[in-house]
Each structure stands twice: as structure tokens, then as C-alpha cells.
Length: 432
Image 1 (tube, rainbow, N blue to C red):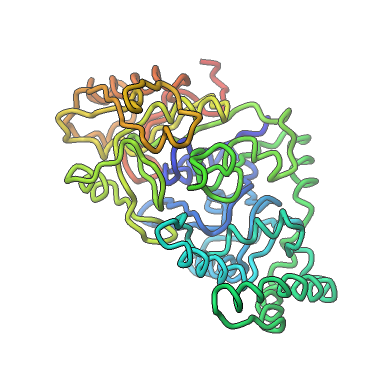
Image 2 (cartoon, rainbow, N blue to C red):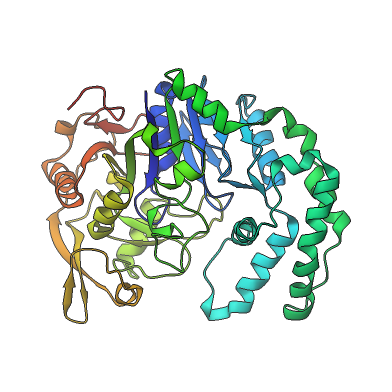
């Protein structure tokens, strides 16, 4: 089987974890290739809810090997806490593999992330304050600390000392904060080194050999298309490539091995943090979507901004990622609405845009142009076939499909792992 990439097609929180879980029994490896613990997946298994942050969702699927690849930045304390929490609930985490080339989040970057956001004031980006951005910046500045450095303390100390030479100047002279000592950084980084040693490996080689052996490998993006540092709504983005191309650089698997790209698109739109959001609802309807959809961050607990579906974004995500199949989640949240608007274009000071404006200023000033579709009142949480859905719900899905340019293969109709309608096989085995 070829490699498969799973991406978020909006601003994140689309339900990628559930989509991964749906494929779990068919997947041999699930690979996280970007981001850190600034994003999360919520997966419901039976009556149990699991909130995952650093770990790939495949860790909940028996027989699946979860991989944290080189493109991820790792907070070791968070990773260990997450592993311990799952093990306490009876989940086997022994198959986890961690790239020796993945970068670590040192404590000074968490401090710098938080104080820099406060320093920006109204110009803040809306980061989670977990040190993700500064760690990626260190990576590009070639002063980063990698997992493999834990096992050569001489090199580790040299890197920490070198980084603190400049970081402490910022903390002291710009932000009026105390300097951070080398020893406290060393202690934190080395605290869990032996615990993860058996997991650390050459994941590029592991994944290449798995694909050569005919294994199915799923690449699971953190964050989403509109948060991609190159292709998102810059500067209100994450610090890594959350689009399908990032799966290659973030894992070492070449693009020739990837055949399918699955885009997860929520039946309405949400985002957290700052930045433009043309379909945002700041009224009772927005609050209804938030309450019914339980739109509060898995990682941060922050209430998500909510709005109607935006197929301009959907088309853009399809094009940038090469999406072959959409998974539309949380269709059930729209039940009970008399009409369901869908954004089909933007109006920017009298000019109509049917595609994403290339000029970020235009996107900031975009007003949504809606197409009104009829709603439905029937409970759809028990539907398992497309024909079981109310006619209006079917039409809504078909219209999204028409407007976004790729087929809708799976529809989420509830939070449970079995609450899905499957229209087409995500692995492409049926040929339909």
C-alpha cells in the first residue's frame, strides 16, 4: 500500500483523530510529522474519551505502530505525562517510535513564547505559549536541541550554553526577566532521557522499510491547512507545515510514495487564536454551534470561534494538499436549523472572490457571500448509510462536494467512533 496523508482542511479541530481512528484497523503505522503539544485530538472509544496532544491517534489502535517523526517538536515532560496517563487507563504504549532527529522544546523557549506574546499586546499571534514557535526558530537558526543530543551530554551542554548566551540577553534586557541557568535546563532535558531511549530510532529508515514491505502508513498532520506557516493565514499560523507536503519533509518519506490525501472538513468552521475569519458568528447562532459542538480546545480549553462552512477555504485546501477524499465531521451539530448557510465566495469592497485572495489584506476585509441551504430536524446520530440521512442533509453534503472539488467519502454524525456514514473506501480499494 502507498502512504496516505491526513490533513485538516480548515483552521484545525476538524476531527482528524476520529478519521485516523476510523482507519486504525487497516493502518500499520500512524506518523505525526509536524507540530508539538500545541494541538490535540479527541478520540472516543466506546464510553471512553481520550485527549491526545503529542501522541499520534494510532496509539489507541492495537497492532498499529505510532511514530513521532523528525518534523515534530517534543516537550518531554508532556510526552511522559501523556504516556503515563494512557498506560494508567490500560493502553499499550510500548510500540511508540521517536525520531532521533526530532527537536526538543527546552524550558527557555516556553518562557520566551509566553513573554513575547504579552510583549506584543494587541498585536499578539495567539500562540498556546508552549514554546513551539521559538523551538522551530532555533531549528532554522541551527541552535536547536535534538532527541539524539540527550545521549551525548557534552554536546547537549554546549548547545544549551550557546543558546542561553543569546536567550538570556533577551530575557534580561528586553523582557526584564531573570536569566535561566544552564543546570536547570540540563536537569529538565535529561530527566526523561532513559525512559524514552528504547523508543528512539531512525524513523526515516523504519518508515521506508515498512513501505517497501507493503505496510500501510498514515501521516497525520497537526493543526491544519489554514495554519500552515507557508500556505495559511500568515502571520496567524503555526510554525510548521501542516499541509500534505509537510509529510515528506517532516518524515523523510518522498512524495512518490504518497497516493492518497484525506482532508478533514468540519460541517461548519471553527478557529482559535487571532486572525481573520470571514464566516465567524458572534451571536446566539455562534454560541449554539459552540455549545452543541462542544467547541473548546482539547489542549488549551479555550472556547473556539465558530461560523458557517466556508467552501472557498475547502477549495483552497483541496488544491494545496491534493485532497482526494474529504471526511466531513460533526454534521449532527447542524440538526435543528431551519436553514444552513454556506459561504461560496467573498466580497472585498465590492469585488467578488471565489478563490482565496492572494493578498492577506483582502482576506482580512472579506465578507462572506452565502448560499442558503434547507436544514433538517431529524436525529441523524443513528444513520449509517447515506440514504438514511434526511434529504436536506444529503443535499448539504452533496453541495459541499460539488463546491470543494473532491468527493466526500465519510460523514461524521456523532462523537462515537462508530457514528459515521461511509460512502467510499478511504483506502481506494473499491475503485469508486
